[in-house]
Image 1: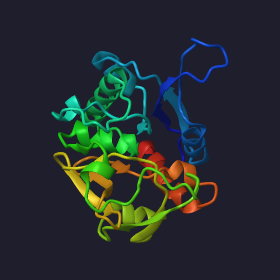
Image 2: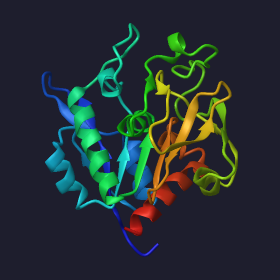
Image 3: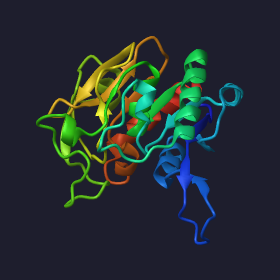
Image 4: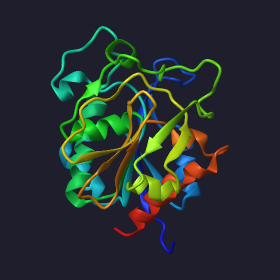
Length: 244
C-alpha cells in the first residue's frame, strides 16, 4: 500500500472503570484491531470536539471511522423523542457532527458503522427511525438475536450491484450481524442507498461526490475474526485514506 494513514475513531463515554465515579472515554477494541490489521494507525477521538477543534484535528487525519454507540438525539433531525428512544449524548452528537462537517469539507475518507451510519445520514439532512420495533411494520428484530453473538451473521443483505460496496466485497449478497434498534428513515442529501435487509431496512449508504464516504448498519469489525471478507471494508477505507 505504501503508506500508513492515521485513522481517527470516534469514542464514547465509559463508566466501566473499577473505581466508582471515574468516567473514561473509550472505543471498542475490535475497531482498533480492524484498522491496525488493514494498515492504518488508529487514533481514538474523545466525544468533546468543538467545531474549531474538529477542523484542527481533521487537518492531521487521513480518515475518520464513526463508531457505534447510543442513540442520536432526535432534535438533530427535527423530531420529538419517542417513548422507545434509548440513551443519548448531546455532547457526542455535537462533536461527531462537527467532525463530519470538517471531514466533508476536506474530502477526508469516512466510514460509518451502526450509530456512525445513522450519524452520517443525519449530518446530510436525513432522518431516522427512533425504534424499528414500534415504527417499522414488518421489521426484523434487528436489536437482539438471543441465540447469536455479535460475532455471528443473522440475516442477509442485498447490495446494489453497481455500488462501491459490491466492488469492495465482490458480491451482491452478504450475511451480516445486527445490534441496533434505530435505522435510516429518509436518506440525507446525496446519500445513496446501496444495501438493504430482507425487510427493506437500509443497511448501507454511499455519499455521492466524495472520495470515500461509506456507512453500514451492521458491525463488520466484530465479524472479521471469523469472517475475513469483512476486512475488505476496512482495507478499502484505509487505502482511500492513503490517497489523501
